Length: 129
Image (cartoon, rainbow, N blue to C red):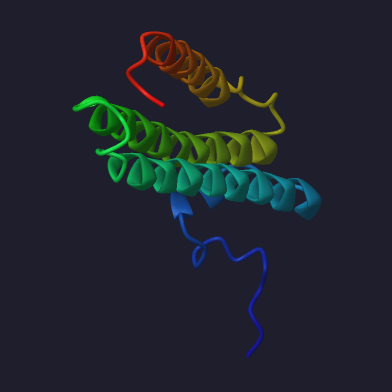
């Protein structure tokens, strides 16, 4: 028995795939690659958080845990934002609507800017090497 690619009853999440019509597979695959890029970015932030947390003897007391928490928070934001963006774009493709604005990218950029300013301030104050 062969499976029908248009059988939306078996695809997960059914709530997403039951909407609209099947888009060009290239769009869905590009959307999936973008999600995977967000997941890779999330993993990088999580790894950075683990590394920062292990720098207690190099960074002044309390700062490494604060920086690690910020990095892990960015990782969580990238993972959740990436899935949210994938869902919204897949739904827009299926409904033949415009894609959503990249709000997660803007939020991550702003948070990275704040982190860079804080790290620069700590470096100038001589609190980190």
